[in-house]
Structures are given as structure tokens and as C-alpha cells.
Image (tube, rainbow, N blue to C red; front, side, top):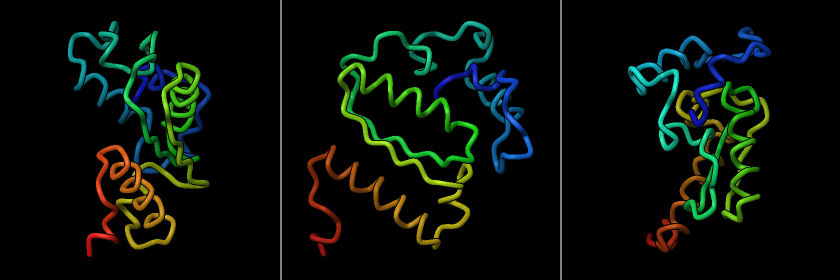
Length: 132
């Protein structure tokens, strides 16, 4: 959830989504923003933030069948244009939360490994397999 405007898109086919819909998204943004849902503070909705220069390096993971796919790709592109190191993990056919629902699937395990590797690198930590 990077851009509250995704909840208002009219080009999304709800039948193509699993686990997270535009209705869920509207509810979540309203719950998060409260009375500011129509005019969110800039830092509350990163997709609306104008200048991303100086933002922290990012790892962004999203499935191609996730409601957030397009907003995540747009955000990654904006980060990169601002000179922010950003790794994108776009998983073909994956839906929102696939890695939590299908934890043991090879695609989920690879996705989780990518997350951990990015976190280890960001923290300067020794990779887990070397700690054993």
C-alpha cells in the first residue's frame, strides 16, 4: 500500500484479484488515514511523495496479480530516477500475500530468501547460512 489512489482506479478487474481487493484497500486507507483520507499527509502515502531523493534503499516485492503491482512498479521507477538503490522482486502470477498462504511453495521460499538477503545486506549482517 504505497498509493491511496489505487483504491479509486476504474481499470482494475476485481475477478483478477485474490486476497486483497479495491474494497479492502479503501477500507485500509480510511482506517489508516482517518479523517485525512481525501487529502493524506505526504509521508503517509509514499506514492504521492514528490521528492524521493535521499530515501533509504528499498526492496520491493510484489506479484503480477496483486492489486499493488502497478503502484509498486511506479514507485520503484521513481526511486531509481531519484538515484535511490532499489531492488524489485516481481513474481509472475503471484497474488497479494501468496508467500504467507503458500509458505512452502518454491516461489514463496525464493521470495522470502530475497527479502532476507536484502535485509541482511542493509543491516550489514552476516548471511544466516554462514551463521550456522
